[in-house]
Image (tube, rainbow, N blue to C red; front, side, top):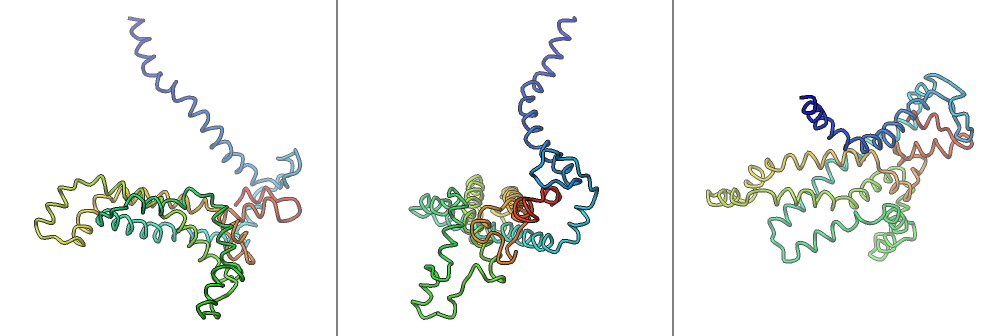
Length: 277
């Protein structure tokens, strides 16, 4: 009887035993940095002293955050970028996925691969390439002058009104293929007999898409939107490579502003305030 009880207990605890390494790693590499950052936000640590928690300043960093116009500018730009990647990027990806799925193109796989290809390139490389393309003497302005549109040949990345739009466009261009693959996989999971029955009943392609296809892939659309929401808040490298948050913080987002506060402002750094952000 006692042996049977021990066996039952072992079976109940065995899954937790196998999960424990993953849980420990999660706590070390995810929870610890979060707790450390929250604790650091209450201290004035510049990053070059070993006494991290020596200068306690309470909520001063949070008061500074609320009054900081650059923080609110970077927050607004981040929200703009997130909304762009959620709605524009998903809309373009879904549109392309529907065209490829219903178009039955001979080279459909090649088209998908070409659209997806920018997603496997380093964001730093893409940012630097677009930075060169959009320079005053770059290929874009050279082409505009060649076709007689000299008035449009402007320094694109030094225009405060355009930079956040440009970096958002480049971000969408890089990652739209990722969402395309997600949507295409969702479309392939649809039972084709449902579409055949709809066509037999007289439904056209547009009606079939809105009444059958889109409702069936709602979970896929939601998943893609969530991934874009998370990814939008994490965008850093492509903006840093193209504009470094400039000109005059016009394309600053929360990630670049954290870096700016950590390593560039007020002498060596301002780690405590960066942790607050």
